[in-house]
Image (cartoon, rainbow, N blue to C red; front, top):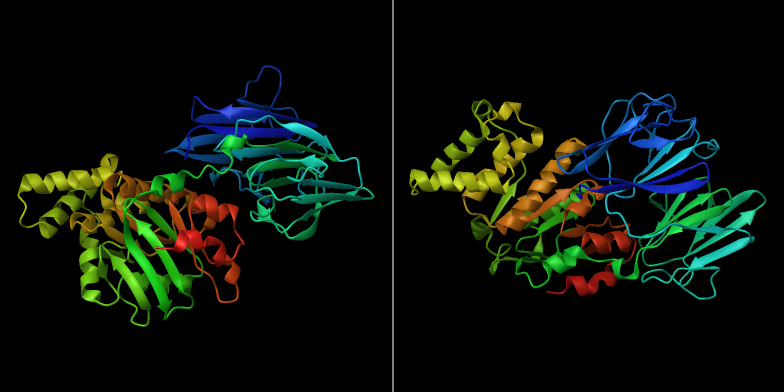
Length: 465
């Protein structure tokens, strides 16, 4: 994650931005004479020492420090003095309790880990109906790619406002949740579509648009372009659905969907699902037709527990002893070099002196991957490596796996359980349940996020080999 973040703050009918750059801890609190805070608020609902934003290992967190009114994150009230993992677009609120009927002194803070270079503008909702979209006939014209001709209609009935979303490609979210049909608007609701941001407040909207050249820059697609397709999957029968995707050399690929569907696919990739029909080619070898050769090409890791005899070993020593076992023909210097290389690839150099039973759960799991890396495996198939991890450990795990794929030219395919983690991946395969065909998709995180809800046929250009 980018170490520079940005806050969009709305309070007392005014909007402003504050950049979090230059240090790792930022104090949030009410502005009072003689007391200085980093992010100063004017509202009486804010405590003098309300909370803090802090950066740790490239990841931003927020913690409420025991404030009087508390802090809400994406609609849920946070426990005090507990780190909350922050992602781009997260919404923090300071209010008295009912966010559907908020206090007039309530505060909204929009967290951005990918700040946009744009100015906030204001638009008064004076008519009974306001159309928003790319079409010139709209009341508020937003001339940006992927915005529908009529993306959104805001209507007023008495003192109440409602938003109705069109059936657009990227969809429309209110407070980070997709909407369909007409829904009520509440004070300080955040509306997003196609990287455009609108905040509803007191019968008007503040809105910010990305620069035209910044709209949907797909960094993952640029990274994957022209890379070797090391693993090619085309399963036509034996699973709940047909699955086709390619995993490139140097790519981290995520599998997202129902647990049973992910497990069936993972077993098929590992040559352990006899009912799967089709082709799974790795380096030219069809792993379905010849499962014995699959183990020569791929490593399948589903267990992340250590033996009791290994728990007291320093992490670096554990890997060096493993090198002796899996590289018996190499001399000690070569074994040591291989061990050091694995420590670097897994981002574990600073932890090599720690005993395994004192390591974090993510460090232990990464150390276990070292055995297959020492064997020279080019493709790693991981069954939910994030299961049971804290947000902090999960971030460390996926950051290390991404570094392993990119810097080590490995292909890493991992089933994951939480959609908010897809930003860590180069490509995402979304598996469906039979009743929800519209969620089956393959693409980069940017495309999956943009086109969530579109049927598989919309991704045909990504699925061909």
